Image 1 (tube, rainbow, N blue to C red):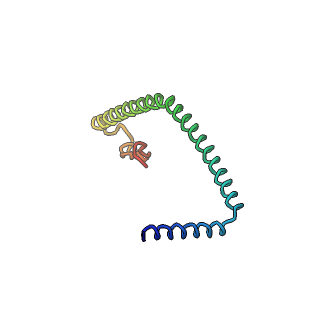
Image 2: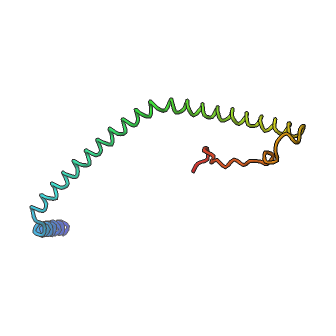
Image 3: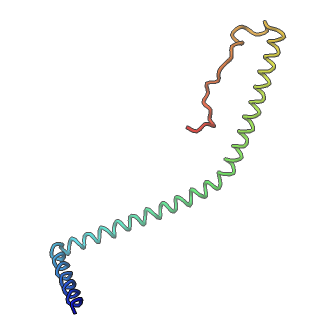
Length: 124
C-alpha cells in the first residue's frame, strides 16, 4: 500500500514538473526549433550525399590511376638503380684513370663532390 501511494506521489510530482516546464517554453519557440532542426537535417543529408558521390568518384579515379602509378614507380626505381650503377662505374673508371695517370684531371676534379639534392625516398 505504501509503495503504491509513493508511486502515485512521484507520478503526480512528475506531471506537475512537466506542466511547469511547458509554461516556461513558448510553443512558437518549439516550432521554430523543430523547423531549424529539420533544415539542419536536410543540409546534413545533402552534404552526406555530396561526400558519398565524391568518394565514389575518387575511388573510380584512384582505380584508373593506381595501375599507371605503380608501373611508373617501378620504372623510376629501375632507372634510379641503373643510374646508380652507371655513376658507380664512372667513379671506378675515374679512380683507375687517376691511379694510372695522376695528371689526367685538373686539381678541381679530384675533390669529392657531395650531393646536396634532397633524398626523395625519405619521409618528410
